[in-house]
Image (cartoon, rainbow, N blue to C red; front, top):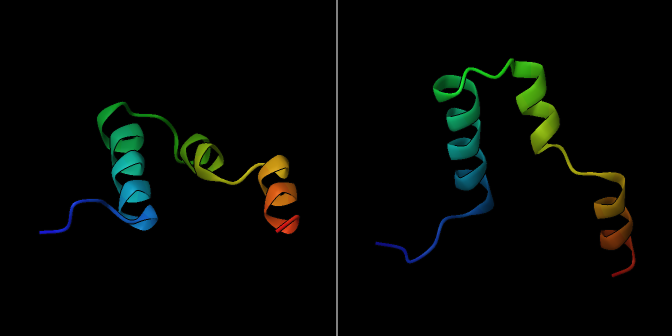
Amino acid sequence: RPLFLTDTEVSVLVFDLLHRIYGYPLEYVIESLAPTESEFDDSSNG
């Protein structure tokens, strides 16, 4: 059994929590999981 979850597994769990459990609209959930501009800037600086 792994000691940690991958980014994809965590995203699926967060998606399920926000959409199915708390009832947030799909658009809000997708937006909340999308990377921000600052995260794109951080990744391009290496």
